[in-house]
Length: 456
Ligand code: 5AD
Ligand code: SF4
Image (cartoon, rainbow, N blue to C red):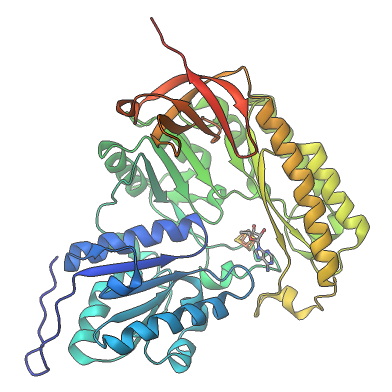
């Protein structure tokens, strides 16, 4: 759909040529940004530029999961204002979770912002832009319609070899520290047929590594057109068995919904890669309860045991929060103990910060900053040590590497193992896009080095 401008009585506006998108936050936001870019390219033929100063439209796709999100947005907006002072036709939009949460407040504080939108309304961007150019008004679109957005998006594009497909959005878990249920809304799953069609398009366009996205993908459930209920494990079988599907991943999962079928899926579906991000947040039952996580540490261990029973080499990653209100030294040591027992390949660790509007924010943020810092450092040190050990265990192994591109060093190529480790090796650039057998020769903190095995 090409939108034609109808500004007959107003002074003629410069045509829109370029778009800059600034993305913060999770993989879901990265996916949303790429869909926004597809949408604006299709509607206006916009070209993506790398610097805001070159853009006719600047979109910020924001994240509010952790501290200071709003402040960061306003300080970035200050920079964009300087550009707009010189070029008043510049369109500035603030989307994502801060857009959802702050709504009209953004334009009260920063009146030069033309559009405020939420994660569920970005499909209306072309129309909003049209309206702004016609009527010179500010717009806020943050209602949360039923997942209609997906019906209005153009076909996804593949960048490199990886593709992303949102299968569900929102969260009904209401962990007490988390803003997501308020910004992304209730859990809604997309019909399996739509997901399969989108994966098909991605594969046909050259995607070799596809990730299914959602705040809680394992809460996925939706009826197919025959009225049969499809759950997450079943969806994985359907998607994983699509012809040409090479590598399949998903993120993020919740420990509460790690069903036996899901644990078994890793062993049953050859394209499903042995890597799982399973956030636990804390190893203390008291804290897990206060966080309203809906599971205890034992439940988490059970899920991990069941996964490893079927897929012993599965790589695991997690999210941790230190310094949640009321967290004692004993509670924190239980987190360290859980980490030692599980053994992670990688992890993301955060200091607790109250998010306005969440239940935990009503409690006193009583763990002093210095203690939060100290706990974070101890946790990071342990996780670093574990991850390094697990990297070293790779040396000597032969593994399939999907070659993603050229490496930083002259003559190097870089790719990923099935369990998502980065591998550098010497090779000809024409190998990019292929999956090759590589023998691992050296381990570093964040990556591996290997040698191409030449098959006769
Ligand atoms: N404080 C610190 N970390 C948080 N996260 C979510 N909310 C908060 C908060 N208020 C972390 C959790 C979650 C990850 C995406 O962000 O660990 O899993
Ligand atoms: Fe936030 Fe908890 Fe939902 Fe994850 S499960 S998005 S941490 S409320």
